[in-house]
Length: 136
Image 1 (cartoon, rainbow, N blue to C red):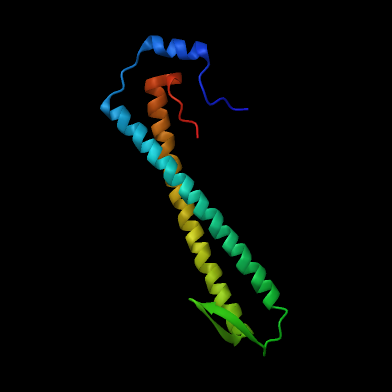
Image 2 (image 1 turned 180 degrees about the vertical axis):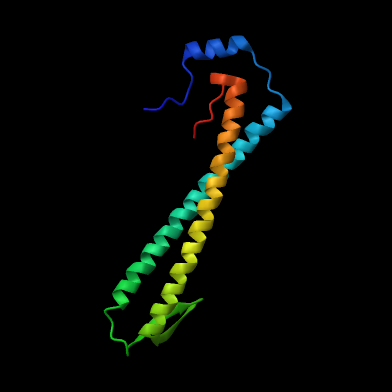
């Protein structure tokens, strides 16, 4: 299990140093916190997109079993439109491709955030050592 708090000995030794928090240090801490919140939101959005993609792929698989001449209800906005099965499959494919693009963009943003958080961790742990906890 990962420790999230300092032990009494670590806290006492950290307090003995009495490190001053400069304005630039506080700005780095605030930036790290902001990035952590963005990271959490993006991860949630990424999970939702992956679930949506999985659902679309499952629906596409089910629709391949339907007769090609049969009309299938397809949701556009707030209403359903009956379309031929091949057309619905094309629309589902384009929706899946759009989600793939969104997923790639979210992963890029997440990588950028992780890189910046790593730099901030390095700088802050270098300055404060064990007296700061940036583990998320």
